[in-house]
Length: 291
Ligand code: GDP
Ligand code: ZN
Image (cartoon, rainbow, N blue to C red):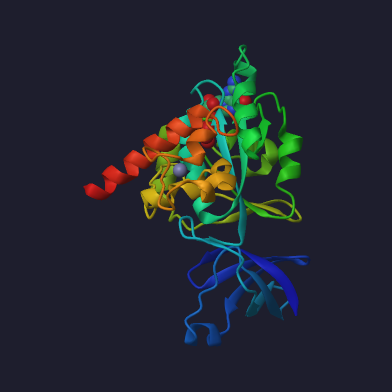
């Protein structure tokens, strides 16, 4: 038996990346009977049925460590959240919403600030210190100048990562710098939309090197904070965590309650602007539910 990873699935055929190359496989009938569908990202074991034509059959699907629904991929460990320092300017409201979404999924986060070649005022330094203080990794990139790409490559090693971020910040350019063979379209927004329309949006894994994979569709570009209750939002602001149990009321949402430990930490362990964005998102979630 040969171990591998499903990198693509089309019409009942699965493409398995292994040490011996890529095999086209069907899944054993038993999976259908048990209502288990292999998905991209699955670690599997296959039997080779035709070595010459690289065909095989999936015998075993290893237990999934995680499961993203959109895009549908298993075993994703990390989300790379990309913003540009300028053009467009980094939008911290949006960054915090991306972070909330990823924290809800319980995946690791890597924040990338791209296009630093355009930012003479070095605004990205401030952003880095805010988020590093919370405990997130932040790296600076210039896809154009090929700056920081090696550091990013290291951060992608031995895992599956999804890229997220608004359009125009340079995600496709970064992926091309990581691996020129992908040759993704950049900059031509209308063309990219065309591409999205005509291809079925099955996720596909692209491998950067032996053990690093990225998901081809720029994961979440639009943001729906669905399935998040206003009351749970506090758990996705990581810097709140050490203080959550010490508020006077155990139902405290840290907005208008007295003796709130979170509010006591403002300007100390909790950044005031992040807290303000917490309140904004909280109100948004409350209003959404009323509609
Ligand atoms: P995406 O929508 O996030 O995939 O962004 P693209 O990769 O298509 O990039 C959007 C535009 O920004 C394109 O015109 C790129 O050439 C440009 N761009 C991307 N990265 C950089 C960078 O590091 N510096 C500069 N100056 N421009 C960049
Ligand atoms: Zn509180």
